[in-house]
Length: 199
Image 1 (cartoon, helix red, strand yellow):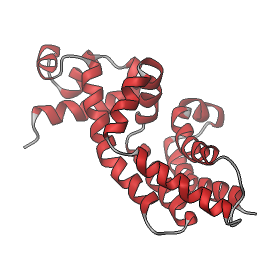
Image 2: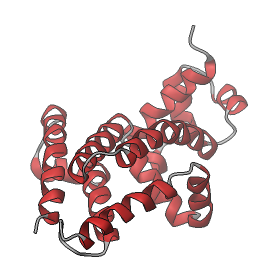
Image 3: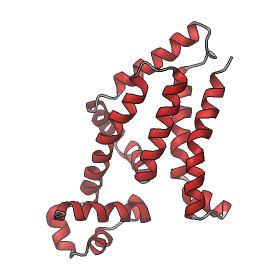
Image 4: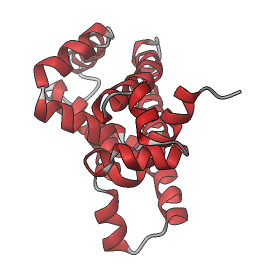
């Protein structure tokens, strides 16, 4: 049997995906969950608190998967392909995540960074960057600031989901076509990023 808390969270995810964080209201979530607003507020006092719970449940599942892709003994090419595929699939399942990150970074950047530090992801990123620098020093890949590489990889994965309404409006693309494009996106981002490494 599904608990009331889970019913609320599933309803909230649908509303956040449909309306975004800013456009979602507690009344919308209550209606989606099939309950009155007073009961919703009894379990979750605010939209922000509910969003935080949902977001960090996703993050706590996603981060170990992403960390695994960049801490294995595989080649850089294999790490990039695995990271891109894992990240895009995760955002497809939780498309509100990129916008929430942007919201948090614009509102309370220090708090958000501290929370992410507590998830112990920074050491693995630093290790990945060091691996890139070693490959550069050996002359195996192009030499450039490794943060450019990291920013390019993450932003190319996330941006389509941030700009999805605009991109669909410009292209006239329906949901089925969009899903197919995102399937292709994984290979395209990996190809583009890896081609930048070639000497």
